Image (cartoon, rainbow, N blue to C red; front, side, top):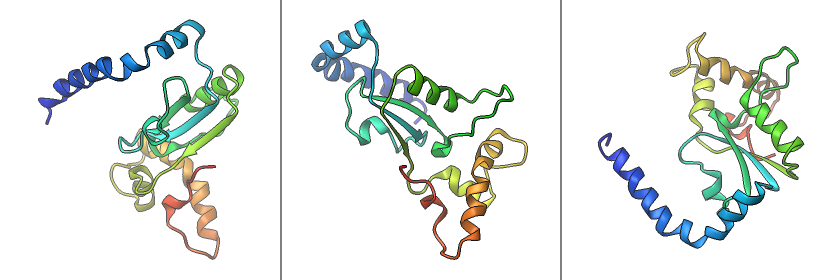
Length: 158
C-alpha cells in the first residue's frame, strides 16, 4: 500500500483538475479574488472516515474547517498557551464572521475509545494523552449521572 500512496494522490489530483476544478473554475477564481466568507465553521475529528466537506457535500469556500483528534475544543486560558483550535475559532468568529459553528462528532472515535479504555495509544506524558485528558471533566460528569450512556455519545453536534 505504501508504494501506491503517491500514485493515488497524483491520480486524484489529475481527476480533480479534469473534473471538479473544471466545473468550479469560476468559483475558485472568485474565492482567490475576494477571499473566503463561509457562513459555517466545522470543528471535526481528523479521522479519515469523517470528512466534513464530503459529509455535507459542500463547494469550495462554504465551510471553514478545523480538525483534530476527537473534535475537541480546549478552553481558553490566559496563560499564553496557544491552541490551534482556539485560534481557528477566534479567526472564524472575529475575522470571517461565521454565523454557525458545528462540532461534528462521530461514532467509534478512536481517541474517545482510547481515553475511555485507558489503553494504547495513550500513555502519561505523551501528546495524545494530554490532548484527550481535555474530556476528563465531561467523563466525570457523565459518570456522576444515573443514566448510563456510551462515551462516544457525549460528543454530538452542538
